[in-house]
Amino acid sequence: MRDRLSYFLNQLGGVPMLEHLKPFNFILAADGYKANHFAETSSDVKQKWTVIVPRKPSKYATEIVAAGTTMLASVFASVRIKEWMIDEAEREITAQGYDFNRQGWTIICRMLDGKLPLRVYGVEEGRVVKPQTPIVGIINTHDSFAWLSTYVETFSQSLVWKMSTVASICRTVRKTLEKYCEQVGTDKSAVNYMLHNFGDRGADSPHEAAVLAGMAHAMIFDGSDCIRANGYIKTLYNTTKNYTSSIEATEHSVMCEHSDAKNRDDFGAAVMAVERLEACVARAKRGVGLPFMSVVIDTYNAYRFVDNYLGIQLHDRIANSGGRLICRPDSGDPNKEPGKIGNILANRFGYMENLVGYKVLADCVAVIQGDGIRIDTYEDVVLGWIGAGFSLDNFCLGMGSGVTHDGARDDFSFSFKSIASRRGDTWEPELKDPITDSGKKSLSGLVRCREDANGELEVYDALHEGNVYSMWTESPGWRLYFEDGWTMYVPNFDEVQMRARA
View 1 (tube, helix red, strand yellow):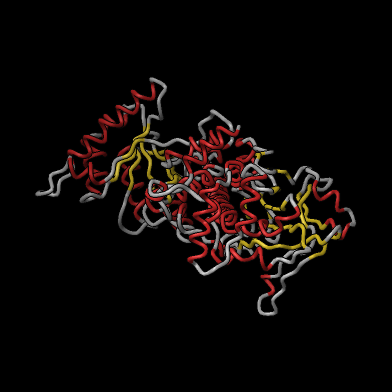
View 2 (cartoon, one colour; view 1 turned 90 degrees about the horizontal axis):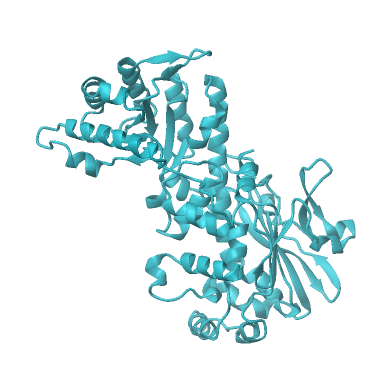
């Protein structure tokens, strides 16, 4: 297990343009101001119980998908503090104007084999929780390292809020799409491929942000252009299964190459796209991929491209291909263009009316809208398509930076707080409660989660119940993910998806 985790960290250790310059140093993966919290922590405090909590609903969701804890445990398990890390950290932290806790890190390096003396608990990944639910809990396991429980906030928060927020955005879209599928008579199973991840190029970084978002999106949807997501899911969750897939697609660079720029004529590009559709069908017959081809249609005149080139001149090849050509408008009003293209396709390739009165395009054609799709725009795009009279059988969305970039820590007001400390043998609750913002009130005490008799998640305080020992016992709703350098719990990704999509 350790070899696999080490490999995983080596792969994820930083965006390539950073890691090729210098190795990842975990000690420096923290906000600078935390460097002297070892000195600010009372000497009689032996342990600190810290939790990651989404404090508030966002403007688009009242529930949060818990995600990122498996990744956090994996990275923690791969950390081995080395002498060179301590030397480098001392130089950099001193240069920032702080004292450096050389003694503390040296003890970890020399006496603990470089392993982090921490435990990481959390709800099962994919759990859908309400605000004010602790989804991760961290505690130091050695009495000399109470400061470490909060030192790891920066790294822990950035992982958990990112993956949880992306998964929550995607779940909101999924639930909305399921609602409209029911309205227009489309089988809900089609939703799995209705929000395609186009977001790698719009991510906050070329590597980590794209991969974290790609894995979080895969908890909710199956269609993704994040090629790396499958590989990281396999490594992280100890599986060989592929969870996402994509289809062949054109972009304007190849469309323009096959077009006549002087005369603004892209018939050659249309021919190329149909040839590739036929190749996709042949490839699918060999057991590779799906017999689908996506073509961007607005290089010059989207209506001519679909109506004349696809709908008349290449009609028979498309209709008889055994595959599906998916038209992608990439400009114009995203609330109107898909419906316009859908009506042209319906006129040229035909349609049927389903039991609730919505049009279902011929199986050989479909429409995808990928331009302008964000959490605050996608529903109007769907309503525009439905308003044109169509079911959702032949329609899907592609979301770019709306998946990988738009979510922020403040969306759900994610916080990392110390809420209890042990002095001697006595645990004492801690509390933050600013009079200027009651929404920033922290939890207080030995607070964690468990399932009630009905299998529902509940939050409780072991201090209030007078049963501190129950605090450290795993139970449904609360797992021990990491302890003293080792991963303790790895969920099944099928189960993660099942919980997140419920």
